[in-house]
Length: 252
Image (cartoon, rainbow, N blue to C red):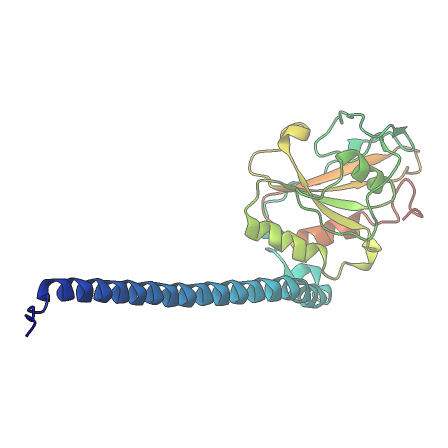
């Protein structure tokens, strides 16, 4: 009878361990793949949700702005800012005026005798008549805005360094119900101190208007500096210097 060899226990155990290790590796890889898949899905969901939120915000902002502007349009000018008595306003100036129809080439820097300007040479093109408020990002050159003064506009110049909440108040004020004396000819725009002579200490905004020639054929520019935003003070200025009191009142 042939001899029978004992089973190779060591070899069997080695094969079993190798098989178990392969199985463990497969399970680990599959687990990692499942976790990566879940992570990818979560990231995709987050991106989609964020995109939707941003998209809705982009769509909603103009709509909200439109509603706010519509409400503001029906509010009285005096609803904004402090009372005239609390605005620290100086008396209006009477600046010797000149430069009517003195059109200069676009790009030429004009040095005005007063700051902000209330009259003087200007560019041939004026700022759009239907825009009431400018920020530092979209304001046209000062020389364009002076042309608006020639057509009876009153401009509220405000320091470009004013806090945002005060600038927001000026924007609302500019879009509110203006007195009939203005004929809707009003613009609020920022002014940099580097653009002209320094303003009086503590004054943060200035109203400007260019009056037409009087009986003596003399013309004047008018500026009124105030420390605080005041629709009440602006209303009084607009009524004192109406749009019809201008070099070319029928323009615009």
